[in-house]
Image (cartoon, rainbow, N blue to C red; front, side, top):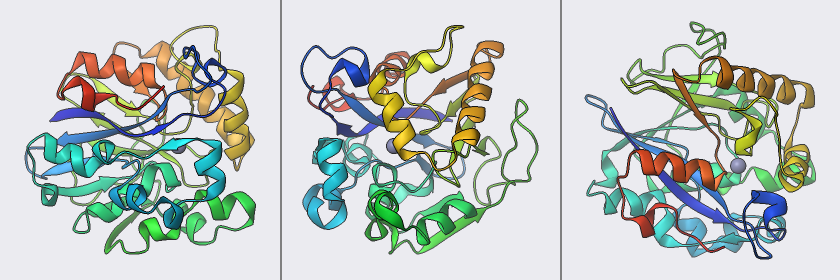
Length: 289
Ligand SMILES: [Zn+2]
């Protein structure tokens, strides 16, 4: 398989380095790290979708004012997965599967750009999104982004273990090299997506952690802004912290076998894009900041 690392959204909250650890100015730069996977027999597989063309066209109808303002989302058509699939020379209809870490607004916005794709998610996440309530519940889960999905494929935990983590049962229609790894805490049905590239494993950890120094080094560190945001968005603190600890352990003990990354860290995305460049630089990371 061939894996492209895409940035499908730019969020620039006020706070600069207080969030991202590197910005010099007032605003930070957070990305929406998605994957486009070329498989041999199953067409193109998208892992998460970031913001989609409908979000860019009518953000006021699709997203909450609270998160548009708080995250200072920059909407750009060129960052949509739809546009980047085209830029890579593919037909969007070739995207046959979309595997989601969870259904938050900054991960599911592009679903409506690929109406023929089969959408894989943990059953528990779908149930949580459908039954969402309260101030944050209504604002994080945006039904309009996924109401029109025609081909859902829900999954339950119960597959083989993967480096000590539980996995979901075989994902129907997908190659066995792609696994859903339940990592609850940020949401009730949050999952990571593991891919056996043939040259080591990739684990897209979604929003199970937010900052690069939370994994991969003995001293764990998160910026205050992202520590605050993670607490704001969590639904189960003990599960979130336990899973983060397990990811940290994985990153130290299996460093040579598993490359771990999260959704919103721009530096992680840049590192992986430089390892496997597949896009013109201006399309690759993009965004202001
Ligand atoms: Zn997110």
